[in-house]
Amino acid sequence: MLKFTNQTHVPSYYAASANDVRHHAPLAGHVRADVCVVGGGFTGLSTALNLAARGYSVALIEASKLGWGASGRNGGQLIGGYSCDIDTFAQYMPPEDVRRIWDMGLESVDIVRKQIEKHRIDCDLTFGYLSAANKPRHADALQAWRDEAASRFGYRGYRYVEAAQLRDYVDSQRYVGGLYHEDSGHLHPLNYALGLARAASEAGVAIYEDTCALSMRKTAAGHEVQCGNGQVEARYVVLACNAWLGRLAPAVARKIMPVATYVIATEPLGEARSRALMPANAAICDCNHALEYFRLSHDGRLLWGGRASSSTRVPASLGESMRRDMLRTFPQLADVKIDYAWGGLIDATMNRAPHFGRVEPQVYFAQGFSGHGVNITALAGKLIAEAIDAQAARFDLFGKIQHRDFPGGMLLRKPMLALAMTWHAMQDAL
Image 1: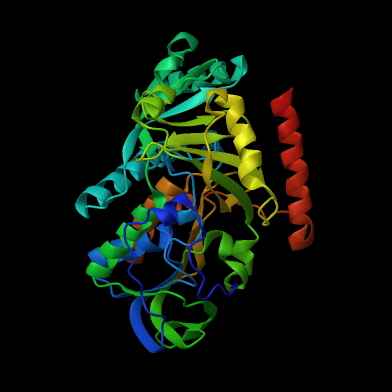
Image 2: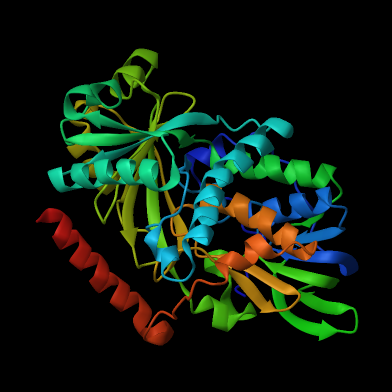
C-alpha cells in the first residue's frame, strides 16, 4: 500500500466547493472492531454505513483524506448499470442470474438516491442523462439497446432522441442522436462522499484519516491491519482501495489497471447561457472509445471530462488542452475562462465488469468499477454488508465472473494500455 499520509485534496472545483471541512484524527494505538474498512472513498464509506446500520462496530482507515481519490475527483455522472455490456455477465451465469445482475444495476442508483435523502446529503443530485451518438453507427447501437432493454428486461426508462430534438438537451452540432435515461443523472461527488462520512460517523463508525494500511496478518480473533502508528484488530476486513490497492493484495491488484482521466471547470456561465447550452441540465457522455463527458454544476459552470491516459502524470498545459477539446463541441464558449483543471485515477478491469470477491473467507474486496464508480460503489457497499451479515447470495453472483490479470506485469501494463488507447483513438477518428 503506497503512503499518502497528510495529503490534502487536489485543487479542483470540488475541493473549492466542499461543504464539510471536518477532520478525523489519525489512528494512534490499538483499536478493536467487528470490521476494519480500508479506504475512505465511496466503496469504503458505503460499506461502513451499511454495516453500522446492521449493528456492526466499524473502524475505517483512510491513507489521506476522505474522498481523496476518484471519489472526490470524478465527473460526477451517476449512470445506472455497468461499464460493460450486459452479455459480459451472460458468459458466466444463466439468464435468471443475468436478470438479477440487471436489476442490481438499476438498484445501485436507487441506493445512492435513498442514502442522499435519508441522510440529507447536500450534493446537488440531479436526474437526467444522455448518451450522445457521434456517428450513425452509434445511433443505431443506442436504439438497439433501448429495444433490447425493453424486450429482454421489460425496462422502458430509455428514450431515443432524434437529431432534430437534440437541441432540447445540448447546443452542439457534433451529435447525430442520443439515448436519454431518466434514471441516471449527476451530483457533486466530493460532497456526496463527505455526506456519507458524516452519516457513518453519526452511526458510530470510527473514522481515521491520514492512516495508511501497511500490511495485514491473521490473528486468533480474525485479522490485524498494521498502520504507521497503530493497529486495527477485526474479525472482518474490507479492502476498498481500488486503484490504490498496492501490496495489500497483489493477486487482486493485478486484475485492475489504474487509468487517469481529467476534468476542467469553466468560470460560471450565468443562468441564461448555461441553460441555453444544456437546456435539460442532463449529464452527457459521447459514444467514442476515448469518450468525453460533461455536465453543468450547481452554480452554472461547465464541467468537461475526458483525455483518458495510461500515465499517472498530469499533462502539461492540461487546462488549455482540454479547453481545445471542449471548444470542438462548444465553439460558442471561446471567450470563457477555465477556473480549474485536475485529474485522478479510476480502476478498470479487462472486461470492464466490476470485480467483487474475497481474498480469504473474512477479507472482502470490491474494485474495477471502470467508470461507473458513483453508482456501483453504493451497490458494493450494500452487498458486502449483506455478505458479512450471512446473506452472501447477491455478492457471490459477482464472484462467478472470471477476471484476468492484465498481461505483462507492472513493467509492460502501461505501454500496452497506451497502445490500446491509440488504437481506439484511431477507430474513433475513422
